[in-house]
Length: 233
Image (cartoon, rainbow, N blue to C red; front, side, top):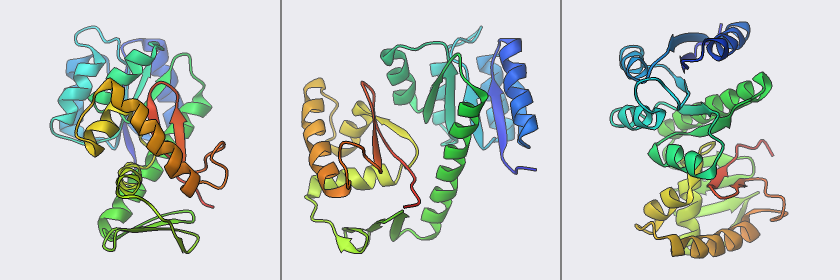
């Protein structure tokens, strides 16, 4: 049996049953909630490893649930919602969601998102045990020296490129919105700074990726932001 416990927050019974059946068939432990207030209560009392959260809940909006949980916990939250507009995704991710899956969805994609989140949790645990280093495929960051390496060769990064790379590394597997990146790297979230961010991302990718047009490490989520992917190469 998987040691991971998942909180399923969904007021639509057929969808909740589909998710629950999928989790049970794949040896996940799970608990369910059909409302926002119930979700916050279950999260606080059971401290699940991952939350699967619908946004359209009968009492409070799912984004408010994210904000409440984030006030005291960093547990991964994967949104599963019929809201498909970029603004809805950005609002949920900015509130603290880790990933966003749009309805209708396949159970295979749901399971893949869960595996990604599990890998990120394992990576975070390893990072906590070895704070001085980060390893992802051929990419290695030595935080104590302030250096990054690719396949043993040191990357010639500017201070801003290194800061961006470290932010992505510490959030491997998580979609970071433009606003989140700007606030954490530049200390601002002005709309016109997104162009500057894209310029830095272009130069960072040229140094980091073998084929910048088909990035292996940092994936673009168009209109939303970027995500550091876990790779074995």
